[in-house]
Each structure stands twice: as structure tokens, then as C-alpha cells.
Image (cartoon, one colour):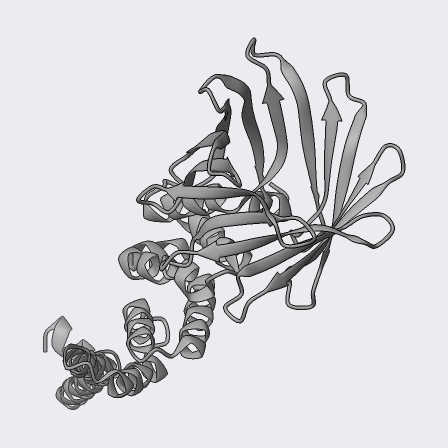
Length: 358
């Protein structure tokens, strides 16, 4: 008997082969189970995504929402399903559903690694870019979401562009400067705001920095301006009380002197698009004293104001300039003969950046 035969007698060789076959079978079972664990749910979710897409094409948004939810129960980290859910909610005009889906999608993205987020960058970008529309006037909320997304994709792209747009849109005026025809400062004004972003005080100064007057503002519970109280250096005051119509437009402004007597009032009218197109100033007895007419560009910016006397003669007019985001950057005050009387320049700050400590 040679050496190999002495090492492995025949019964032991048979036993070894049996154990090898058993290990092979176990491995195959394990591999099949693992494949099933990963691929069968993935296949199921793929079929659900196709079903949801068909529902979206048919504008069956409620059915699509339900199907996307089924996908997310199995694969909550599938950002394409979150984007689909957002689109379905949008189609169904479900604003609450959109907010909930956006919040949950961002929460899922926060749990991911940078590599996982980059792999689903297209879907995640689509999700984040919906924030401004979803939160409407709550620009701070939309901005916070987009800024977080910008941190995930610091190289720039569409999210960085959206952040920049919000930073230019969410600005408030901090200073106005009036310059004479020689370009020298003739006077200037400073604007102050409360923590909620409402204008609380407007102060106008002479060229040398001495006070001309200041105005404080009071608001109703719904946030609309109710009173403007102007204080002069001689201690006198003038109060304007503002009235609003059912559509939330300023309708009338009545002025009172320091004794509380009516000194006159303004009436406001609007065009078919809801834009202010005329203000009329009346004396206490209702006699028209002066009126102003406004013109707009195609973007809805008020580019001109012309002031007329009661007889229709031009008293003065203003021409305004705006940036691409609708912020007034300059204005020119012309006298009736067309000569320039004053030029105005404005300064702004982005309150979104200020609130986030940037």
C-alpha cells in the first residue's frame, strides 16, 4: 500500500466526498436565498414603480401615491420613489402630503453616506428643488432645506443656483440714499425690522446726519399694516390709518394730525391683474387734491409713477430700475419739465443668510 492509500483509507475518502457535497449544497441554498433576499424585493419594487408611472400618466394621482408608498415600505432609501411620491402629491394638489413626503425624503437622505447620495443625485436634486414651491412664502424653511442639500453637493449645480435665487429674492431694504444732481448725498433713510422681518421703523436724515423725521409701523394680527405714525423733530406727529379690502389690498389711508383730526385721505385702485394703478389724495371735504398713476413692465415691476394735479397737469414723475429678482436698485425723480431733481440708490440685506448666521 502506497503512502496516499495509507493516509486515506477507502471508507474515509467516501466520507470526505459526502461532506464536500453537503457543503456544496448548503452553499447553493445560501446563495439562492441571498439572491432571493436582494433581487426578488428589488424586482417587486421595480414592477410597482412601473405601475405608479402608468398611474401618473393616466393622472390617477391618488393611486400613484398609494403605489409609491408600497415601494417605500420596502425600500425607504429609494429616492426616486420619494420624488415620485412628491410628484403624485403635487398632481393630487395634496400640499400636506407634499410637505410630509419632502420631510421624510430629506430625513432618509440625511442617513445616507455621501456615496449613496451621489449615486441618487438626480432624484435627490429633484426632491430638494421642490422646497420653494412647497413652502411658498416660508422662504426660511425652503432655504434651510436647500442649504443642507448644497452641503451634500458642494461642487455647485442646480441646488447652488436655487440657493442663490432665494438669497436674492429674500432681501429687505436697509438704506435709501437721495443724491442731488451733482451726485452728492442730499439725505438718506435707514430701515429697521423686528425678528419676524416686519418693517418697524423708517428714519430719514438730513445730509449732515441730523434727524428729519421717523415713522413707526403697527400691524394687525394677520400681519397687515394698520398704522404709520410719523414723528417730527418739533414733537408733532401725523398718523395714517390703513384699511384693506376683502382681497387683502390696501383700499384707503386716512391721515390724522396730532390732535386726532382728519387732515386728508388717500384712495387706492387696482387693474385687472390686481396691481396698484392709481392713488388719489383728497382733502377732508372730499375734494381731489392730487393723484398718481403707475406703470409696470412685463415682469410686474412698477417702473414709473407719475403725479398729477387735480386739473391733470403733471407735477413730477419717478422712474424705477430693478434687478433680475425684482428688487428696486435705483430711482430717478424728475420735475414736471423733465429735469432731474433727485436720484435714489438702495441697499439690501438677505435676511435668510442673516438668520442662519452666515
